[in-house]
Image 1: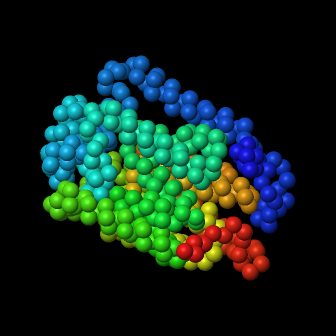
Image 2: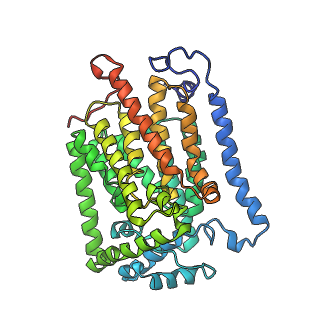
Image 3: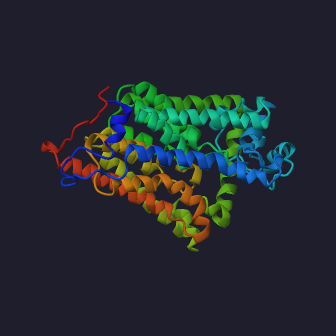
Length: 424
């Protein structure tokens, strides 16, 4: 099926039991998708240019003081290349390197990641800071677009991926959201037919383990034994290499830094504005830390139950993938706004399912809302001081689980078409 024909089904989906009686063309046509995406891309290009007209070019470069998170990546790599990887977890020593590169930087951008991610970023400081930052962003953007195309192939998918607001949030932050989303996207896209390569991609997420905690559960429930074995092996090998290269003291320093990070998150209201979790929502409402963790535990329990329900029995792979991605955004109390690039994967997987089986009423509008959610988090949450994004995550998860249940009940024998189950 051609790209044009696939996207056109957004306007005229196949009729099924859940969408019966809807014969009018949906307003979200292919032409409008192109126009809206193109307009967003134009805004992304013009807004920084207009902003820089009234400011010093030197201090408003895309990877200067504004998008400053990458300076922690570069500085940690610099210390590792000098043979002092453990010093990356020292605020004082890391801050000294950061200030040598960005003298006008206020405060210190901490290094919050395990040694496995430092292994991944080990060579980035071989280049000067800004070329390194541009290369990192370019590589991760290409990987993200390729992952979306692996899910829904076509030129319009590329355009929509580039225009996805989560991309600009990651660019503004100079962070790794596009990288982790591409790992997850490729891992799930390869799962049905390339279980080994799927395991390699999913195993790379050990670089941010709190985003990968439900992957083994899903693979266990679906009996994807080969993928599970490879995923675990990749994580173990990368961990062993990082410890061997950087020393056990680096791992000890990382574990010790977790307590400091927890204290900052609990007490810093500015940080909470960027954390789209129920923990952050509770803390904004002045609920004690114990109560906030309890609320987050409820969210995590719902996520676990959803994965078990969807992955333990036959279900369309698109719905399985979207459910797992959404569920993992509901587990950890320490999630950041740039991690919401994963919403783009949810949209792609559910969009692919809808193209094949039809959309229910308001589902396409819901996908649009989900697409703009990262931008809403950046612009709206700081003004209303209410972290509503975790609620949106759970609502989306409920929609996915409900659709799985509907598909199971709506077909003879409880099995719908396009079910994918790894048998190897």
